[in-house]
Length: 494
Ligand SMILES: Nc1ncnc2c1ncn2[C@@H]1O[C@H](COP(=O)(O)OP(=O)(O)OP(=O)(O)O)[C@@H](O)[C@H]1O
Ligand SMILES: [Mg+2]
Image 1 (cartoon, protein in one colour):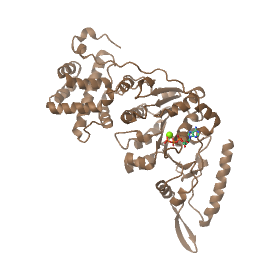
Image 2 (tube, protein in one colour):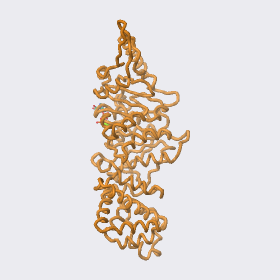
Image 3 (cartoon, protein in one colour):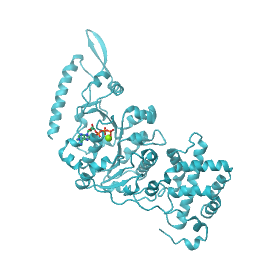
Image 4 (cartoon, protein in one colour):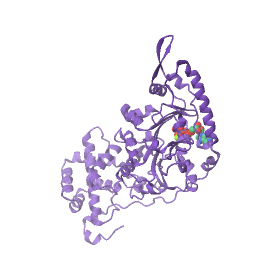
Protein backbone atom coordinates (compact mmCIF):
# COMPACT_ATOMS: atom_id res chain seq x y z
CA UNK A 1 0.00 0.00 0.00
CA UNK A 2 2.99 2.28 0.53
CA UNK A 3 3.32 2.42 -3.26
CA UNK A 4 -0.23 3.57 -3.56
CA UNK A 5 0.41 6.44 -1.18
CA UNK A 6 3.62 7.40 -2.95
CA UNK A 7 1.82 7.27 -6.28
CA UNK A 8 -0.90 9.48 -4.93
CA UNK A 9 1.54 12.06 -3.65
CA UNK A 10 3.46 12.17 -6.89
CA UNK A 11 0.25 12.30 -8.93
CA UNK A 12 -0.97 15.08 -6.66
CA UNK A 13 2.17 17.11 -7.20
CA UNK A 14 1.80 16.64 -10.95
CA UNK A 15 -1.75 17.82 -10.81
CA UNK A 16 -0.78 20.95 -8.90
CA UNK A 17 2.04 21.68 -11.30
CA UNK A 18 -0.23 21.11 -14.27
CA UNK A 19 -2.79 23.39 -12.69
CA UNK A 20 -0.26 26.20 -12.17
CA UNK A 21 1.28 25.90 -15.63
CA UNK A 22 -1.94 25.17 -17.43
CA UNK A 23 -3.71 27.93 -15.55
CA UNK A 24 -2.11 30.43 -17.82
CA UNK A 25 -4.62 29.61 -20.54
CA UNK A 26 -7.64 28.99 -18.35
CA UNK A 27 -6.92 25.41 -19.22
CA UNK A 28 -10.08 23.53 -20.18
CA UNK A 29 -9.05 20.28 -21.78
CA UNK A 30 -7.13 17.92 -19.60
CA UNK A 31 -5.44 14.59 -19.31
CA UNK A 32 -7.24 11.71 -17.66
CA UNK A 33 -6.68 10.75 -14.06
CA UNK A 34 -5.11 7.30 -13.96
CA UNK A 35 -6.07 6.77 -10.32
CA UNK A 36 -9.71 6.50 -11.35
CA UNK A 37 -8.90 3.62 -13.68
CA UNK A 38 -5.86 1.87 -12.22
CA UNK A 39 -6.23 0.52 -8.69
CA UNK A 40 -4.85 -2.17 -6.46
CA UNK A 41 -8.36 -3.32 -5.76
CA UNK A 42 -11.57 -2.70 -7.66
CA UNK A 43 -14.79 -3.14 -5.78
CA UNK A 44 -16.23 -5.48 -8.39
CA UNK A 45 -13.04 -7.34 -9.16
CA UNK A 46 -9.70 -6.82 -10.86
CA UNK A 47 -8.88 -7.54 -14.49
CA UNK A 48 -5.87 -6.64 -16.61
CA UNK A 49 -2.80 -5.68 -14.64
CA UNK A 50 -0.63 -2.71 -15.57
CA UNK A 51 2.55 -2.92 -13.52
CA UNK A 52 1.21 -3.72 -10.06
CA UNK A 53 -2.17 -2.04 -10.43
CA UNK A 54 -5.28 -3.29 -12.17
CA UNK A 55 -7.96 -2.17 -14.57
CA UNK A 56 -11.38 -3.35 -13.39
CA UNK A 57 -12.52 -6.69 -14.79
CA UNK A 58 -15.57 -4.98 -16.18
CA UNK A 59 -13.39 -2.65 -18.23
CA UNK A 60 -11.01 -5.49 -19.15
CA UNK A 61 -13.88 -7.47 -20.63
CA UNK A 62 -14.66 -4.47 -22.72
CA UNK A 63 -12.26 -5.55 -25.46
CA UNK A 64 -9.01 -6.21 -23.62
CA UNK A 65 -5.82 -4.26 -24.15
CA UNK A 66 -3.86 -3.15 -27.17
CA UNK A 67 -0.24 -2.86 -26.10
CA UNK A 68 2.23 -0.94 -28.22
CA UNK A 69 5.91 -0.80 -27.41
CA UNK A 70 9.18 -1.18 -29.21
CA UNK A 71 11.49 -3.99 -28.35
CA UNK A 72 13.09 -3.88 -24.89
CA UNK A 73 10.66 -1.30 -23.54
CA UNK A 74 9.01 -3.69 -21.07
CA UNK A 75 6.05 -5.35 -22.78
CA UNK A 76 6.99 -8.66 -21.23
CA UNK A 77 8.28 -7.53 -17.85
CA UNK A 78 5.80 -4.75 -17.10
CA UNK A 79 2.65 -6.17 -18.64
CA UNK A 80 2.60 -9.82 -19.74
CA UNK A 81 4.52 -11.24 -16.77
CA UNK A 82 2.51 -9.10 -14.39
CA UNK A 83 -0.76 -10.77 -15.47
CA UNK A 84 0.59 -14.14 -14.41
CA UNK A 85 2.20 -13.08 -11.15
CA UNK A 86 -0.89 -11.09 -10.22
CA UNK A 87 -3.44 -13.72 -11.19
CA UNK A 88 -4.60 -14.43 -7.64
CA UNK A 89 -5.72 -10.82 -7.25
CA UNK A 90 -7.90 -11.01 -10.33
CA UNK A 91 -11.40 -12.35 -10.80
CA UNK A 92 -10.77 -16.10 -11.38
CA UNK A 93 -8.98 -16.28 -14.70
CA UNK A 94 -7.48 -19.00 -16.88
CA UNK A 95 -4.79 -18.03 -19.38
CA UNK A 96 -3.83 -18.92 -22.92
CA UNK A 97 -0.32 -17.63 -23.47
CA UNK A 98 1.68 -17.39 -26.68
CA UNK A 99 5.09 -18.19 -25.29
CA UNK A 100 7.26 -18.66 -28.33
CA UNK A 101 10.47 -17.84 -26.51
CA UNK A 102 9.51 -20.10 -23.56
CA UNK A 103 10.47 -17.16 -21.39
CA UNK A 104 7.03 -16.74 -19.84
CA UNK A 105 6.65 -20.31 -18.58
CA UNK A 106 10.21 -20.42 -17.26
CA UNK A 107 9.58 -17.24 -15.38
CA UNK A 108 6.07 -17.65 -14.06
CA UNK A 109 5.20 -21.33 -13.76
CA UNK A 110 6.96 -22.12 -10.45
CA UNK A 111 5.01 -19.33 -8.76
CA UNK A 112 1.75 -20.05 -10.52
CA UNK A 113 1.91 -23.74 -9.72
CA UNK A 114 3.17 -23.63 -6.15
CA UNK A 115 1.68 -20.39 -4.86
CA UNK A 116 -1.42 -19.92 -6.99
CA UNK A 117 -2.40 -23.53 -7.69
CA UNK A 118 -2.56 -23.33 -11.46
CA UNK A 119 -2.35 -26.45 -13.65
CA UNK A 120 -0.68 -26.21 -17.01
CA UNK A 121 -0.92 -27.59 -20.52
CA UNK A 122 1.78 -27.12 -23.11
CA UNK A 123 1.45 -27.37 -26.84
CA UNK A 124 4.47 -27.09 -29.10
CA UNK A 125 3.83 -27.84 -32.74
CA UNK A 126 7.56 -27.65 -33.39
CA UNK A 127 8.54 -30.19 -30.75
CA UNK A 128 6.16 -33.02 -29.95
CA UNK A 129 8.31 -34.24 -27.07
CA UNK A 130 7.73 -30.90 -25.35
CA UNK A 131 3.93 -30.98 -25.72
CA UNK A 132 1.74 -32.24 -22.92
CA UNK A 133 -1.44 -32.02 -24.97
CA UNK A 134 -2.42 -32.50 -28.58
CA UNK A 135 -4.91 -30.74 -30.77
CA UNK A 136 -6.39 -32.39 -33.84
CA UNK A 137 -8.16 -29.70 -35.87
CA UNK A 138 -10.55 -32.13 -37.52
CA UNK A 139 -11.30 -34.55 -34.70
CA UNK A 140 -14.21 -32.61 -33.31
CA UNK A 141 -15.01 -30.74 -36.48
CA UNK A 142 -18.75 -30.99 -37.11
CA UNK A 143 -19.73 -32.18 -40.59
CA UNK A 144 -21.35 -28.89 -41.45
CA UNK A 145 -18.06 -27.07 -40.85
CA UNK A 146 -15.83 -29.28 -43.00
CA UNK A 147 -16.04 -27.09 -46.07
CA UNK A 148 -15.47 -23.88 -44.18
CA UNK A 149 -12.54 -25.41 -42.34
CA UNK A 150 -10.93 -26.56 -45.60
CA UNK A 151 -11.22 -23.08 -47.08
CA UNK A 152 -9.74 -21.59 -43.95
CA UNK A 153 -6.86 -24.04 -43.95
CA UNK A 154 -6.03 -23.26 -47.57
CA UNK A 155 -6.28 -19.53 -46.97
CA UNK A 156 -4.06 -19.68 -43.93
CA UNK A 157 -1.49 -22.16 -45.16
CA UNK A 158 -1.60 -20.88 -48.74
CA UNK A 159 -0.82 -23.08 -51.73
CA UNK A 160 2.09 -22.42 -54.05
CA UNK A 161 -0.30 -21.01 -56.59
CA UNK A 162 -2.11 -18.46 -54.52
CA UNK A 163 -2.63 -15.93 -57.31
CA UNK A 164 -5.12 -18.03 -59.23
CA UNK A 165 -8.23 -18.67 -57.12
CA UNK A 166 -9.03 -21.83 -59.08
CA UNK A 167 -6.08 -23.66 -57.51
CA UNK A 168 -6.96 -22.77 -54.00
CA UNK A 169 -10.62 -23.51 -54.54
CA UNK A 170 -9.66 -26.89 -55.89
CA UNK A 171 -7.29 -27.50 -53.00
CA UNK A 172 -9.96 -26.76 -50.45
CA UNK A 173 -12.43 -28.97 -52.32
CA UNK A 174 -9.93 -31.84 -52.30
CA UNK A 175 -9.10 -31.42 -48.62
CA UNK A 176 -12.80 -31.22 -47.84
CA UNK A 177 -13.48 -34.49 -49.69
CA UNK A 178 -10.68 -36.28 -47.86
CA UNK A 179 -12.00 -35.10 -44.49
CA UNK A 180 -15.49 -36.28 -45.41
CA UNK A 181 -14.07 -39.64 -46.41
CA UNK A 182 -12.21 -40.00 -43.12
CA UNK A 183 -15.36 -39.06 -41.21
CA UNK A 184 -17.32 -41.74 -43.08
CA UNK A 185 -14.63 -44.27 -42.34
CA UNK A 186 -14.72 -43.21 -38.70
CA UNK A 187 -18.49 -43.67 -38.57
CA UNK A 188 -18.22 -47.07 -40.21
CA UNK A 189 -15.39 -48.39 -38.06
CA UNK A 190 -16.16 -46.62 -34.82
CA UNK A 191 -12.63 -45.28 -34.40
CA UNK A 192 -11.26 -41.82 -34.95
CA UNK A 193 -7.63 -42.87 -35.01
CA UNK A 194 -7.32 -42.08 -38.73
CA UNK A 195 -9.31 -38.87 -38.65
CA UNK A 196 -6.45 -36.38 -38.78
CA UNK A 197 -4.64 -34.17 -41.27
CA UNK A 198 -1.76 -36.62 -41.53
CA UNK A 199 -4.17 -39.07 -43.12
CA UNK A 200 -5.76 -36.34 -45.21
CA UNK A 201 -2.36 -35.71 -46.72
CA UNK A 202 -1.79 -39.42 -47.15
CA UNK A 203 -5.06 -39.79 -49.07
CA UNK A 204 -4.10 -36.93 -51.37
CA UNK A 205 -0.83 -38.69 -52.18
CA UNK A 206 -2.81 -41.85 -52.77
CA UNK A 207 -4.83 -40.16 -55.54
CA UNK A 208 -1.51 -39.38 -57.18
CA UNK A 209 0.08 -42.74 -56.56
CA UNK A 210 -2.76 -45.18 -57.02
CA UNK A 211 -6.02 -43.68 -58.14
CA UNK A 212 -7.62 -47.11 -58.50
CA UNK A 213 -7.30 -47.87 -54.83
CA UNK A 214 -8.67 -44.47 -54.03
CA UNK A 215 -11.66 -45.09 -56.30
CA UNK A 216 -12.48 -48.23 -54.42
CA UNK A 217 -12.05 -46.55 -51.06
CA UNK A 218 -14.39 -43.71 -51.98
CA UNK A 219 -16.91 -46.07 -53.55
CA UNK A 220 -16.89 -48.25 -50.48
CA UNK A 221 -17.06 -45.65 -47.70
CA UNK A 222 -18.33 -42.43 -49.28
CA UNK A 223 -21.94 -41.48 -49.90
CA UNK A 224 -23.35 -40.53 -53.31
CA UNK A 225 -22.51 -36.91 -52.88
CA UNK A 226 -18.86 -37.55 -52.04
CA UNK A 227 -18.58 -40.12 -54.80
CA UNK A 228 -19.96 -37.68 -57.38
CA UNK A 229 -17.62 -34.86 -56.41
CA UNK A 230 -14.68 -37.21 -56.29
CA UNK A 231 -15.44 -38.53 -59.79
CA UNK A 232 -15.76 -34.93 -60.97
CA UNK A 233 -12.29 -34.24 -59.67
CA UNK A 234 -10.47 -37.17 -61.17
CA UNK A 235 -12.18 -36.76 -64.56
CA UNK A 236 -10.13 -33.60 -65.07
CA UNK A 237 -7.26 -33.93 -67.51
CA UNK A 238 -4.12 -35.37 -66.04
CA UNK A 239 -2.14 -32.16 -66.19
CA UNK A 240 -4.74 -30.16 -64.33
CA UNK A 241 -5.29 -32.90 -61.80
CA UNK A 242 -1.60 -33.17 -61.10
CA UNK A 243 -1.20 -29.46 -60.55
CA UNK A 244 -4.26 -29.43 -58.33
CA UNK A 245 -2.92 -32.29 -56.24
CA UNK A 246 0.54 -30.81 -55.85
CA UNK A 247 -0.96 -27.51 -54.85
CA UNK A 248 -3.07 -29.31 -52.27
CA UNK A 249 0.02 -31.06 -50.95
CA UNK A 250 1.77 -27.74 -50.60
CA UNK A 251 -1.11 -26.53 -48.43
CA UNK A 252 -0.59 -29.64 -46.31
CA UNK A 253 3.20 -29.40 -46.27
CA UNK A 254 3.28 -29.07 -42.47
CA UNK A 255 1.88 -32.59 -42.23
CA UNK A 256 5.16 -33.95 -43.52
CA UNK A 257 6.74 -32.78 -40.32
CA UNK A 258 6.79 -35.38 -37.54
CA UNK A 259 6.25 -32.84 -34.80
CA UNK A 260 3.20 -31.38 -36.47
CA UNK A 261 1.90 -34.86 -37.27
CA UNK A 262 2.24 -36.03 -33.68
CA UNK A 263 0.85 -32.92 -32.00
CA UNK A 264 -2.17 -32.81 -34.32
CA UNK A 265 -3.02 -36.52 -34.33
CA UNK A 266 -5.33 -36.47 -31.32
CA UNK A 267 -7.14 -33.86 -29.29
CA UNK A 268 -6.31 -34.27 -25.63
CA UNK A 269 -6.57 -30.61 -24.72
CA UNK A 270 -9.84 -29.91 -22.96
CA UNK A 271 -10.68 -26.30 -23.73
CA UNK A 272 -13.85 -26.48 -21.68
CA UNK A 273 -11.92 -27.22 -18.48
CA UNK A 274 -10.44 -23.72 -18.60
CA UNK A 275 -13.78 -22.41 -17.44
CA UNK A 276 -13.96 -24.64 -14.33
CA UNK A 277 -10.33 -24.92 -13.26
CA UNK A 278 -7.51 -22.45 -12.94
CA UNK A 279 -5.48 -23.51 -15.95
CA UNK A 280 -2.79 -22.04 -18.08
CA UNK A 281 -1.95 -23.10 -21.61
CA UNK A 282 1.46 -22.30 -23.04
CA UNK A 283 1.70 -22.26 -26.80
CA UNK A 284 5.40 -22.76 -27.23
CA UNK A 285 6.10 -23.45 -30.89
CA UNK A 286 9.63 -22.14 -31.23
CA UNK A 287 10.72 -18.88 -32.75
CA UNK A 288 12.97 -20.66 -35.21
CA UNK A 289 10.04 -22.64 -36.49
CA UNK A 290 7.60 -19.80 -36.13
CA UNK A 291 7.39 -18.94 -39.76
CA UNK A 292 5.97 -22.21 -41.02
CA UNK A 293 3.89 -22.60 -37.89
CA UNK A 294 2.29 -19.19 -38.07
CA UNK A 295 -0.71 -20.62 -39.86
CA UNK A 296 -1.14 -23.50 -37.44
CA UNK A 297 -0.84 -21.19 -34.46
CA UNK A 298 -3.53 -18.91 -35.76
CA UNK A 299 -5.76 -21.84 -36.68
CA UNK A 300 -5.40 -22.99 -33.11
CA UNK A 301 -6.23 -19.58 -31.71
CA UNK A 302 -9.23 -19.44 -33.97
CA UNK A 303 -10.39 -22.79 -32.62
CA UNK A 304 -10.35 -21.32 -29.13
CA UNK A 305 -12.55 -18.46 -30.18
CA UNK A 306 -14.91 -20.78 -32.01
CA UNK A 307 -15.17 -22.99 -28.93
CA UNK A 308 -15.75 -20.05 -26.65
CA UNK A 309 -18.46 -18.60 -28.83
CA UNK A 310 -20.15 -21.94 -29.43
CA UNK A 311 -20.21 -22.81 -25.74
CA UNK A 312 -22.52 -19.84 -25.29
CA UNK A 313 -22.70 -17.22 -22.58
CA UNK A 314 -20.65 -18.40 -19.58
CA UNK A 315 -22.17 -18.69 -16.13
CA UNK A 316 -21.33 -16.54 -13.12
CA UNK A 317 -18.90 -19.08 -11.71
CA UNK A 318 -17.08 -19.72 -15.00
CA UNK A 319 -13.51 -18.47 -15.12
CA UNK A 320 -12.57 -15.60 -17.34
CA UNK A 321 -10.24 -16.61 -20.17
CA UNK A 322 -7.41 -14.23 -20.94
CA UNK A 323 -5.35 -14.53 -24.12
CA UNK A 324 -1.87 -13.14 -23.78
CA UNK A 325 -0.35 -12.58 -27.19
CA UNK A 326 3.01 -10.95 -26.72
CA UNK A 327 3.93 -10.90 -30.41
CA UNK A 328 0.53 -10.58 -32.02
CA UNK A 329 2.23 -9.50 -35.23
CA UNK A 330 3.44 -13.04 -35.79
CA UNK A 331 -0.08 -14.43 -36.05
CA UNK A 332 -1.13 -14.88 -39.61
CA UNK A 333 -4.83 -14.92 -40.36
CA UNK A 334 -6.87 -15.35 -43.48
CA UNK A 335 -8.98 -12.34 -42.87
CA UNK A 336 -7.15 -9.13 -42.13
CA UNK A 337 -9.99 -8.10 -39.88
CA UNK A 338 -9.83 -11.30 -37.82
CA UNK A 339 -7.99 -10.05 -34.75
CA UNK A 340 -9.74 -6.68 -34.78
CA UNK A 341 -13.05 -8.49 -35.14
CA UNK A 342 -12.44 -11.17 -32.55
CA UNK A 343 -11.19 -8.72 -29.95
CA UNK A 344 -14.63 -7.19 -29.92
CA UNK A 345 -16.64 -10.41 -30.25
CA UNK A 346 -15.28 -12.35 -27.30
CA UNK A 347 -16.19 -9.70 -24.76
CA UNK A 348 -19.68 -11.18 -24.43
CA UNK A 349 -18.12 -14.47 -23.45
CA UNK A 350 -16.00 -13.52 -20.44
CA UNK A 351 -12.80 -13.49 -22.42
CA UNK A 352 -10.33 -10.85 -23.43
CA UNK A 353 -6.99 -10.53 -25.12
CA UNK A 354 -3.87 -8.52 -24.54
CA UNK A 355 -2.38 -7.93 -27.96
CA UNK A 356 1.21 -6.76 -28.13
CA UNK A 357 2.76 -5.02 -31.13
CA UNK A 358 6.00 -3.19 -31.77
CA UNK A 359 4.24 -0.14 -33.13
CA UNK A 360 0.89 1.02 -34.32
CA UNK A 361 2.21 1.15 -37.87
CA UNK A 362 2.88 -2.60 -37.54
CA UNK A 363 -0.88 -3.03 -36.98
CA UNK A 364 -1.59 -0.91 -40.02
CA UNK A 365 0.72 -3.02 -42.14
CA UNK A 366 -0.87 -6.21 -40.85
CA UNK A 367 -4.53 -5.27 -40.83
CA UNK A 368 -4.70 -2.26 -43.18
CA UNK A 369 -5.37 1.23 -41.93
CA UNK A 370 -9.02 0.48 -41.37
CA UNK A 371 -8.39 -2.79 -39.56
CA UNK A 372 -5.89 -1.13 -37.26
CA UNK A 373 -8.41 1.57 -36.44
CA UNK A 374 -11.05 -1.07 -35.77
CA UNK A 375 -8.67 -2.89 -33.48
CA UNK A 376 -7.91 0.26 -31.56
CA UNK A 377 -11.57 1.17 -31.34
CA UNK A 378 -12.55 -2.35 -30.25
CA UNK A 379 -9.95 -2.86 -27.58
CA UNK A 380 -11.26 -1.06 -24.54
CA UNK A 381 -7.81 0.03 -23.41
CA UNK A 382 -4.69 1.08 -25.25
CA UNK A 383 -1.27 1.41 -23.69
CA UNK A 384 1.71 2.97 -25.45
CA UNK A 385 4.74 1.95 -23.44
CA UNK A 386 7.68 4.27 -23.01
CA UNK A 387 8.42 7.63 -24.47
CA UNK A 388 6.42 8.27 -27.62
CA UNK A 389 7.60 8.87 -31.16
CA UNK A 390 6.19 11.66 -33.29
CA UNK A 391 3.52 9.55 -34.97
CA UNK A 392 2.10 8.32 -31.65
CA UNK A 393 2.42 11.73 -30.08
CA UNK A 394 0.52 13.29 -32.98
CA UNK A 395 -2.24 10.76 -32.52
CA UNK A 396 -2.48 11.37 -28.83
CA UNK A 397 -2.45 15.10 -29.38
CA UNK A 398 -5.32 14.73 -31.86
CA UNK A 399 -7.34 12.58 -29.52
CA UNK A 400 -7.05 15.20 -26.81
CA UNK A 401 -8.55 17.79 -29.10
CA UNK A 402 -8.36 21.53 -28.85
CA UNK A 403 -9.57 24.16 -26.52
CA UNK A 404 -9.97 27.89 -26.84
CA UNK A 405 -9.01 30.62 -24.46
CA UNK A 406 -9.24 34.40 -24.41
CA UNK A 407 -6.17 36.58 -24.22
CA UNK A 408 -6.06 40.33 -24.79
CA UNK A 409 -9.73 40.18 -25.88
CA UNK A 410 -8.97 37.72 -28.64
CA UNK A 411 -9.96 34.08 -28.78
CA UNK A 412 -7.10 31.66 -29.38
CA UNK A 413 -7.30 27.95 -30.22
CA UNK A 414 -4.74 25.51 -29.08
CA UNK A 415 -4.24 21.76 -28.74
CA UNK A 416 -4.57 20.51 -25.19
CA UNK A 417 -1.12 19.10 -25.74
CA UNK A 418 0.86 19.56 -28.91
CA UNK A 419 2.64 16.49 -30.30
CA UNK A 420 5.92 17.99 -29.10
CA UNK A 421 4.55 18.37 -25.60
CA UNK A 422 3.34 14.77 -25.61
CA UNK A 423 6.77 13.60 -26.74
CA UNK A 424 8.52 15.39 -23.97
CA UNK A 425 6.22 14.22 -21.20
CA UNK A 426 8.14 12.14 -18.79
CA UNK A 427 6.77 8.69 -19.64
CA UNK A 428 10.06 6.95 -20.34
CA UNK A 429 9.48 4.41 -17.53
CA UNK A 430 5.73 4.40 -17.92
CA UNK A 431 3.56 5.18 -20.86
CA UNK A 432 0.44 6.75 -22.20
CA UNK A 433 -2.73 4.94 -21.38
CA UNK A 434 -6.22 5.28 -22.82
CA UNK A 435 -9.08 3.46 -21.11
CA UNK A 436 -12.67 3.69 -19.95
CA UNK A 437 -13.44 6.56 -22.28
CA UNK A 438 -11.14 8.77 -20.21
CA UNK A 439 -8.82 11.24 -21.90
CA UNK A 440 -5.27 9.86 -22.28
CA UNK A 441 -3.51 9.31 -18.98
CA UNK A 442 0.19 9.71 -18.42
CA UNK A 443 1.76 6.93 -16.40
CA UNK A 444 5.08 8.03 -14.91
CA UNK A 445 6.28 4.57 -14.19
CA UNK A 446 5.02 1.04 -14.51
CA UNK A 447 6.60 -1.57 -12.31
CA UNK A 448 8.31 -4.57 -13.83
CA UNK A 449 7.86 -7.92 -12.09
CA UNK A 450 11.55 -8.11 -11.24
CA UNK A 451 11.32 -4.95 -9.15
CA UNK A 452 9.37 -6.97 -6.62
CA UNK A 453 11.94 -8.94 -4.59
CA UNK A 454 9.71 -11.84 -3.71
CA UNK A 455 8.44 -12.28 -7.25
CA UNK A 456 11.92 -11.91 -8.69
CA UNK A 457 13.10 -14.77 -6.47
CA UNK A 458 10.23 -16.91 -7.72
CA UNK A 459 11.01 -15.94 -11.31
CA UNK A 460 14.50 -17.33 -10.91
CA UNK A 461 13.23 -20.72 -9.74
CA UNK A 462 13.62 -23.55 -12.18
CA UNK A 463 10.42 -24.24 -14.13
CA UNK A 464 9.15 -27.81 -13.64
CA UNK A 465 10.31 -30.24 -16.34
CA UNK A 466 7.77 -30.96 -19.04
CA UNK A 467 5.99 -34.24 -18.40
CA UNK A 468 4.62 -36.34 -21.19
CA UNK A 469 5.35 -35.61 -24.80
CA UNK A 470 4.42 -37.58 -27.91
CA UNK A 471 6.85 -40.16 -29.20
CA UNK A 472 4.78 -42.35 -31.50
CA UNK A 473 3.67 -41.54 -35.02
CA UNK A 474 -0.08 -42.01 -35.51
CA UNK A 475 -1.10 -44.86 -37.82
CA UNK A 476 -1.78 -44.37 -41.52
CA UNK A 477 -5.00 -45.71 -42.92
CA UNK A 478 -4.39 -49.36 -43.86
CA UNK A 479 -5.89 -48.89 -47.30
CA UNK A 480 -5.31 -52.38 -48.63
CA UNK A 481 -6.95 -53.88 -45.63
CA UNK A 482 -9.89 -51.48 -45.91
CA UNK A 483 -10.59 -52.03 -49.58
CA UNK A 484 -9.92 -55.73 -49.40
CA UNK A 485 -11.86 -58.07 -47.26
CA UNK A 486 -12.63 -55.50 -44.55
CA UNK A 487 -15.44 -57.47 -42.94
CA UNK A 488 -13.01 -59.69 -41.10
CA UNK A 489 -10.72 -56.80 -40.21
CA UNK A 490 -12.84 -54.19 -38.52
CA UNK A 491 -12.36 -55.28 -34.95
CA UNK A 492 -9.58 -52.73 -34.42
CA UNK A 493 -11.02 -50.03 -32.25
CA UNK A 494 -7.74 -48.37 -31.18
N1 LIG B 1 15.29 -9.63 -14.43
C1 LIG B 1 15.61 -8.40 -14.87
N2 LIG B 1 16.34 -7.56 -14.13
C2 LIG B 1 16.66 -6.35 -14.58
N3 LIG B 1 16.31 -5.87 -15.78
C3 LIG B 1 15.58 -6.65 -16.57
C4 LIG B 1 15.19 -7.97 -16.18
N4 LIG B 1 14.48 -8.51 -17.19
C5 LIG B 1 14.42 -7.59 -18.16
N5 LIG B 1 15.08 -6.48 -17.80
C6 LIG B 1 15.20 -5.26 -18.61
O1 LIG B 1 13.91 -4.71 -18.81
C7 LIG B 1 13.77 -4.18 -20.10
C8 LIG B 1 12.49 -4.60 -20.72
O2 LIG B 1 12.54 -5.97 -21.06
P1 LIG B 1 11.29 -6.74 -21.65
O3 LIG B 1 11.74 -8.10 -21.97
O4 LIG B 1 10.14 -6.60 -20.74
O5 LIG B 1 11.00 -5.89 -22.99
P2 LIG B 1 9.97 -6.20 -24.16
O6 LIG B 1 9.25 -4.93 -24.44
O7 LIG B 1 9.15 -7.38 -23.83
O8 LIG B 1 10.94 -6.50 -25.37
P3 LIG B 1 10.77 -7.53 -26.62
O9 LIG B 1 9.89 -6.85 -27.61
O10 LIG B 1 12.18 -7.65 -27.12
O11 LIG B 1 10.22 -8.80 -26.09
C9 LIG B 1 15.00 -4.59 -20.88
O12 LIG B 1 15.78 -3.44 -21.11
C10 LIG B 1 15.73 -5.57 -20.00
O13 LIG B 1 17.11 -5.35 -20.05
MG1 LIG C 1 8.97 -9.32 -24.73
